[in-house]
Image (cartoon, rainbow, N blue to C red; front, side, top):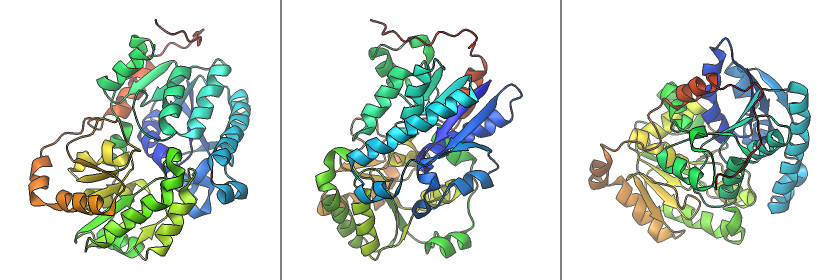
Length: 379
């Protein structure tokens, strides 16, 4: 079985990585990896090199984002880049003739390959459908679910949501979130390497901040990041800010980060992120990692704004608005001994690190010969 996977940025590759590693070990499965998006941009670390260094074969690659995208950085530019993904992926699918497309999450290139697959009668299995989130991501995620034939959800709550959307119950498999698998299997980076590369001493207290733009709040993007920076200045410890994704509005965030005089990095590979997350005192911002992964290591999270609205959140997550006083207050609460005692025994509701194995085992049982890809709502 030839399984085609598209990766656009660090967020989706980290989830696909443990699945790819398991596919490698299967005699009757073969992957076709397509690389695009941020992986091919130097400003974000040209992370295709990390994919190759991890001994994954890249079947195809193409550019989604050009200089015009970086200059305009708005919703129209996002739509144009997605259009390029549609054009390129339709040609790649026609040439590669995969038996199955494994798409994921709520990212543009994955949305494009899902829709192309549906049009070309190629079965599509989607990871992490049924979740609720803010910004354009929610619409992309639910749209992908409606174009997919099989669903690997993070939990039973998200399965139920897909059932309500008219998806076939026996084609929905609650397996957990593969990003947890990725973190569990990664090695810890030595303290000296982290300190040299990121200027962070992990034996002393530090924070991590990851704040992405919200595409439905573009007029507020600049103010939102400024409020976060002001709050960080009130916390006297080491800080590391990770660059956001390149959605519309990201240029404004990058400019503020660069002018802040706070410590920042364009990107982190998975082992670096695991190390920094595991030993940090608190995670700040609006990344889904705060909801999905931080509770695995009992890390307090200050979740800012609307980007993760509607997602089931573990007890380690403190929700606040984009206000420097609220953010600073929440950070201090998260750092307190009382709060850390409260969350020391929490379990991650998004899985136990075995999602990838479940996904691959289920795929092995798929009978795709003469499979009818026609979708029909169940009510």
